[in-house]
Image 1 (cartoon, rainbow, N blue to C red):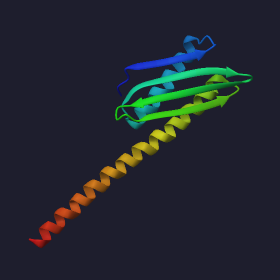
Image 2: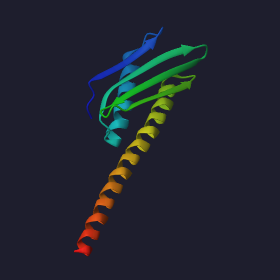
Image 3: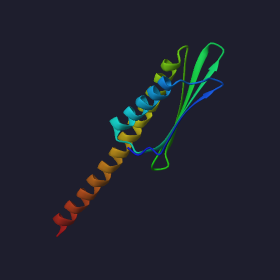
Image 4: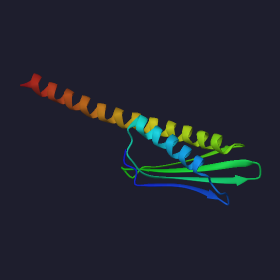
Length: 119
């Protein structure tokens, strides 16, 4: 996992070290799990009325960008919701890439078998 920039920002809120560390651990854990190469991520925490809103933006190596929003009455829970949504998207992305690679290798194998049979 390659992370060059990590931002955890609060809009009109002072963030403590605990929330910053919690967010970095949660996000890096997701990308280690799926072996996705991350360039940068940005976590923005904002409080509106009685809800906390976490906006999570992630940039991967292949110029792929993911963005999710989590809302809850608790800041950590809002982050957990956003991380769960990012996790779901990354899991689907990795699965789609693996299927494409498997399809390419399978079609190449079929082509070589046809060539061998014809000769």
